[in-house]
Amino acid sequence: MAIGPGDTLPEAKLAKMGADGPEVVDLNEMGKGKKLAIFALPGAFTGTCSTAHVPSFIRTIDDLKAKGVDEVICVSVNDVFVMQAWGEQTGATEAGIQMLADGDGSFTKAMGRDFSAPPVGLIDRSKRYAMVVEDGKIVTLQEEENPGVCDVSGGEAILETL
Image (tube, rainbow, N blue to C red; front, side, top):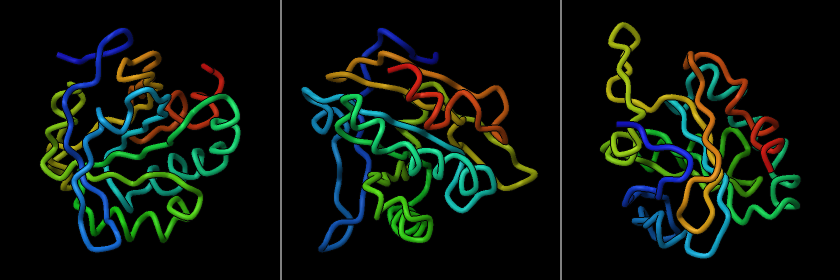
């Protein structure tokens, strides 16, 4: 069952690349007392994710922070090494976006937003969505009907909800 506005984020252990290698990130601990803009997408280095979704949050990160967002986080069902390389290649890391790996897809499944598209090799990946979370509670969640589109889940659309 998909969770949404008014619900609490599920327990989530994600991963990021730290100075000494991969580090576990407790999303709930990270968000205590903070406002987070979290966007999730089907996969690193994929078309719409690379050309539209990540760039929309790079363009809007300063405006999101001006509206009280403490952290902007990108989540994808990929490993930490891929997320690190993708963050560096897109400029997301330099812009200040946290690139978090949901390596086993457990967060994506707990959110009720997993899907598979075997013809293109996407198995148990995340649907495309974005949300604003305040102190662990989902305030706004906007999900795309089609994973190849980035309209309601882009940085500009989330900025409009603040």
